[in-house]
Length: 136
Image (cartoon, rainbow, N blue to C red; front, side, top):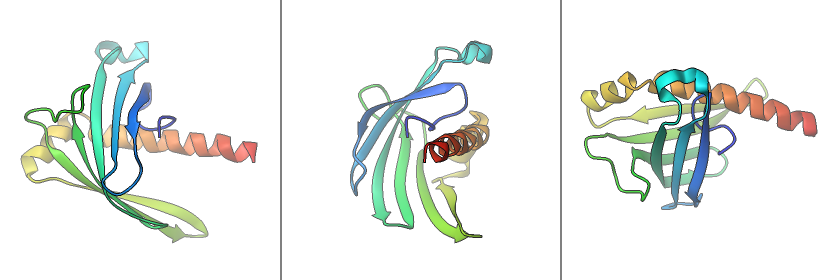
């Protein structure tokens, strides 16, 4: 996850990573790209709590903005994320759906660039998988 999670130009540090039901992933994304102007040097802490892990096809988690200690950030929405993996043309296709308790919560994170950030991190995942495939 640390190798691809987060938008391009950001690096992810895993503070805790327990990939199991009720497990917690506590992470920090840091902007390391000087070309990103005011974002350079910024940190964004997050915490995911895994609700369901079904091998091989489904991961359900809640994702939230937190501080360095893992305490939920006031005024920020909790996101219910469902990631499913389906076979498509002989390959695995991930489908990620994000649910919000309110339209306002969705609009809040959209204003922060969540759509562009998620798209960017999946391009990073593609790049990582290409590199790993070259090693095989």
